[in-house]
Image (cartoon, rainbow, N blue to C red):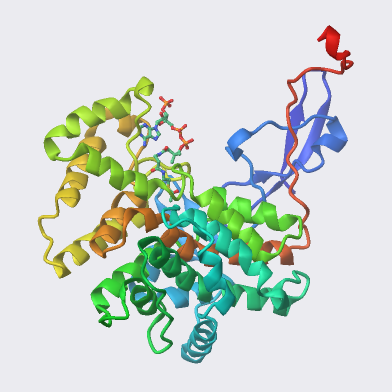
Length: 429
Ligand code: ACO
């Protein structure tokens, strides 16, 4: 027999709703007919108990610390695959075989250059603009350049837009960086790997070439893999909601980038590194922890806590491992901030405040240290995150458009404002 949930209102009326089961994870109560049947809404700010869509892309078990992309554990993908294989997986549902990978890489590679006129777009921004401000503008502006991939009802347009976004984001992120430091743009080199090419566009200068270090490329590639998707987080939900109105994919991804910028989301690794710099050294950790526990201080332990993970974020473990590898490769065994982060983590994991609230390190706790060691400035961290997350956003957007249950997203509200009243003439107000 199909499972049902019953809602009984205190006026005695009772209503039944179907229960839906996923392949794994909690069942959901299908309340779509609630308003029609009972004339009431549900109230769930922050979506604490609300599934906004069904999806086959990413699964998280926050209590167990599990993250799966299309069923594959993140720990296996991070070790056995590169970022473009993971992109293929997220977009197509299966890992590529050798021929499929070659075709996919070739197509992405062919789209790495941006329209030459886009170069001039950058000069409209102040040099001291935050690179994320530039990113929101430039990515949104792609829709003014690529008119042949804007029809969301045409599967081929959607696919070309997907390739363009995945291929051009590294170029645009590197351009935003070069512009902010007053250096000339470095064009992509298609013989390099996706991530190697990105590092070269970031760090090469016309006066001397940049030699790609494979250990560092692998570390950055891992950062991309770990950030590629994370089911219905704030920025992904933003992309879905923007896309639900029929907006074009470039505009939707720009909206996702805007949402990611916030310090409670993608901006956390930047905030985390700033926090480590502020703490300065291990002797001040105790005092800082005290302030992070005090609600009136306005201080939070950045890189700690997560809406979904109530256990160690599996990505944070992989990131800590990568942190060791990068610091060893660069001979930075005694890195001050890494040591400080380890000391902070140890104390927080033993402190009842953090333990009782199930606050564990999230991926951002170590990713800032890795990026800093790679030579990436703090202000670029969220740009790197947006580069990596673009594939997740596109996969989710594609899934939404293809979903027969897809509708414009339109939450309801609990109105608590003034009831109907009349406008008084100016003299009587
Ligand atoms: N430091 C100190 N206290 C914290 C922290 C923290 N980092 N995170 C949560 N808490 C406390 C809250 O004060 C609250 O305490 P209370 O129950 O006594 O009131 C309790 O833990 C629950 O916190 P909420 O804010 O209700 O949890 P929520 O799920 O809404 O927030 C969030 C999750 C935003 C990530 C939060 O933990 C946070 O601000 N962390 C720091 C920022 C951060 O690292 N963000 C990265 C997220 S991962 C990502 O985007 C890739």
